[in-house]
Image (cartoon, rainbow, N blue to C red):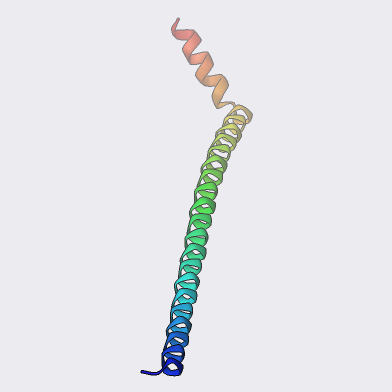
Amino acid sequence: MDTMGFVLLLLISFFCIEIFCMYIVTHRLARQKAAVCHLKHCSETYQLRIILNEWNIVVQEARRTRDYFDRIERGEENQQLNNFLSKL
């Protein structure tokens, strides 16, 4: 093999290695980007779950409060208190 052919073969092999390395880097960056997107999605889902649970607790307390005042307006609460006091 003459020196010109060897140099040409060497340049082609370096070019192939460079293309392969670029492919590896691009693939790794794509995997990292996908991992970051997945972690963000998990974090947002967790935060939304916390917000919805807290909102549900507030709604339940509001419903209990509303029911309590509705019972007071109808006089049911006073009757229960009077019944309890009369048994003492």
